[in-house]
Amino acid sequence: MATSSLPQTIRSAFFHDKCDLRIEQVEHPALLPGHIAIENKFCGLCGSDLHFFHEQMFADTLKTPHPITGASLPIAMGHEFSGVVRAVGEGCKGVLKVGDKVAVMPTIFDGSCSACKTGATNVCRQTGFYGINTKTGGMGDGAVIPEDLVFKLPEGIDCDVGALVEPLAVAWHGISLVRDQITENSTALIIGGGPIGAATLLGLRAKGVTRIAVSEPTLSRREFALQLGAIASYNPLTDNVPAEAPKALGAPDGVDMVFDCAGVGPTMDTALACLRAKGTLINLFVSTNTTTYYSFPMISKEITMSSSLAYLSSDFKEVIAAIETGKMDPRPLITKRIRLEDVVKEGLETLTQKDNQNCKILIDLSL
Image (cartoon, rainbow, N blue to C red):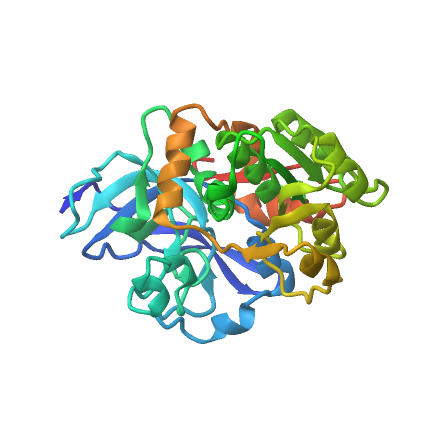
């Protein structure tokens, strides 16, 4: 076992109940065989963190022990994180060493179900996430993670950018579902200009798609989408998106693909109206709300609808490679850095304010 000195205790954010997130001093997790101890450097705040804190989304499932980790409430928060290897557990493959910068893929899977046997570990029957279904996560000073879920960052990628790999991989996986359809002339509409919508925009451009429009009600996010490379952006509350977006992209018969990163209100109807015949709709949103839509456009145009959950290890590797080679620069996504102690007031509450203009808020664990 290669190791540096592990601290006896660390700070960690634990979710106890609705609007009840506590920063606690706890024992450093034990370093298990085949695991990596990480000194966390940065952790991003995700939409699912907001749902947990404000709405208790999935909270009922957290009251009973997770079938793989055995963890139940309170649980450690934070699943978008990066850091530096602090110690390497016994039995590891020797790929990682103390001092390496790393990004964490936080998925939990059993490896034995029908999905896992086909390589689809992201839809494991017992799926879970570090930072959601565990007592160790990214929203704290340290974590212990299985070696296969820890990815070394190249020399040119700093840990703040490393914390963006997870949300970028969410978008990248959704795009991978239509990778065989992508050409230099492909057209795409992104519905929702939040962090995942912005990540989808960066991912599409990294894959060579340049004819992209964004539908987003918030002005600052529409302007940000244009800065990231969108050709046009629209306010769905005032603009006729189905009439205007395809035309702006030079696709009067409809766009090739729509990525729904919002999943609220009439977004499904907008997506179906914007797509060409035989087009594809990819759902990237996570919501507990029931969605209704007018089905005739889907049938009459033989539209394919697909959904995307999380990512695979291949997505993490490809995102890191895209950043390293300069095909993708996600640094503009970082709009604010906060202390762990300020995660509620300056993070979770800020992101729900109507005048919020942040894309990605990072917790800087060095502060």
